[in-house]
Length: 613
Image 1 (spheres, rainbow, N blue to C red):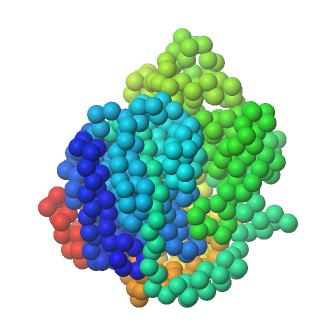
Image 2: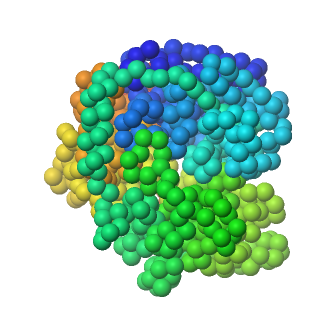
Image 3: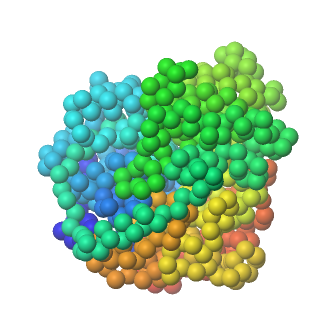
């Protein structure tokens, strides 16, 4: 066992109910860290190209970040990874809570699942005992019910499960832990559902070795005491209000999409509407704080909603508030709580769910679908009750809900009638609640990242600009080129730097918000945990390798990434110009997105060459 990691992963084959441990070389940790980086290496090497993501050969990985499970601040993240059934590309989804650290406590740096069970199953790792057990009595339960029932049997265990949406193979379904933290994007809940795997139950007793525990504790104390989460008056925005502090701010700046990306806040969703769904209004329902493992900020919260007779539910994040609020012109806060709770329980992505409902409303408004199609639901902007009923239908695949359950792209293909112009997606993944008209480089990310349609993929202008975010405050030793805001070599270099830095920090287990509070002593913390004396340049190089491998996976699956596009109403500046400069700096051919042969060789990705050349 090495410092900071256990040196092994666990393979689970549901077809023959077998477990197999595999050793991981120290070199692999240096090159890929953990999270979706290490997952990409094992999935790429072990899953044949053109594998059906819902078939028995598909591999689904659960990988904590390399530093996850230690006391390092903001490192409680784990990633689910595999081939996305939604987009056909590389798929990964990032999640917090306490499930990731429990993988480490079980003595593994990742769990890989293949095969298909002959009936509903759940996996347990309790201490040193591993089992695959019958889950027939759990099938049909929502994620909260599943977690509570399994929690009674396995006291103190950490549980990740799918709800009805994953069971019914909704391509916008995710995987839920802590009753409301969701690995939501890429449709990986459907992969878990296709394997008839209801849940993973973990209760470990292993401890990580730390290279220099005293120094680590000293740095953690210093960082936590100095953390700046932005204060307005007596309110600490991130600590007190969480991400919903942005609900009104981003609408006024033009960042939040309004009315299915076709409206503006000033005309369609002005302050009189926004005032009803602000972070301060949501805070009135807070019962207690909630934070992920190792988090000094605790930006989450558990709410009690008397109007809905809900005793305990997670506070909706900004993305959820915008997808069920701004995007639908819905200022009914109680309905947003209900929609969020339904998604948490069913295990369905709130971004895709809200965007697909917005698509349906616009189709209804333009006569493409009618009351006969919607089972009598009158879909109008701001019609909160109709939206709740429509979401229930999507979760249960009932009537029009069956048409919508796989997202707006699939729905538009089923409906036809020129409905595709109302589907705001990238390769099938609904666009997040941030506009390329505000964050100029995010259009490039939405279109060309190996996991398209994602805002959590390392976007230059989002990571260093925007409300209360500080340029050049990323990490000690990381300085952005001076003219990164304008078209130039400096900007191209910055696009590459931030993208690859993001891959690295994600795979180390850092929360995205580590970029926003204060400088994070990354190299010092990494050394104190692992003993590695890595420079920031070496860390970024590992991030470049990870990003290039994700790209190679998507290309290997036959995806024509460079000819992808997003709907005209969502676009900002010409994102293709940014991409050309980005490719030149990262070492990819801008004409087809292929990593150059010499790039693959320099990154020790020689095993990819045979697939691309």
